[in-house]
Length: 212
Image 1 (cartoon, rainbow, N blue to C red):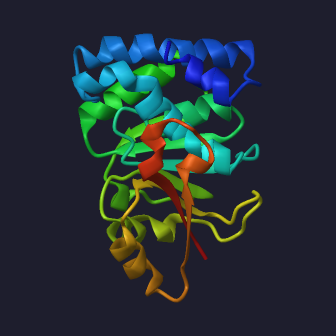
Image 2 (cartoon, rainbow, N blue to C red):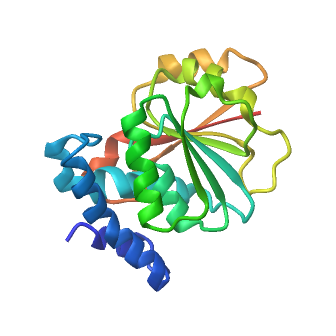
């Protein structure tokens, strides 16, 4: 079954985490039948296309306890909820402007008893607080997203990567990264996901790290 993908790449999960990842399939199946936050034809690939894709960030960086992360444009809770399961001592703030999506994200987090998740209906640009990292899955053009969120990132880092944006997006976005690089105060690094996962789905995916 697809959820075995999680055990394959994250073999050190404790029993609680294994159960929470198992519950994701049931919870999103139930909610998606009422509120369409994931393409119905894509539900069969929930663990590959959504859960494991979200956890790619964890292959690049293990968030230290106390790290504060905003999932900007979370939709139904990706990548924030899978990451919150994996890093229960980090704090996740899930933001999206669409109320029905936040309703699903909040309900899933509550059902999983994730004490480290807060979900709020709000436009990302209007969030008035700071974080160590902003994570997201391709909600808009990278330069626009950077403009919306980069000023919400704290300068002082205490993780193995510099504080910044961790953006899951496809390959072939040189125009977008080029426009971000025009700002001399910003650095951009790209990490192909095929470095972490062997499934063909990931051959066209990458993480973009934007930092000072």
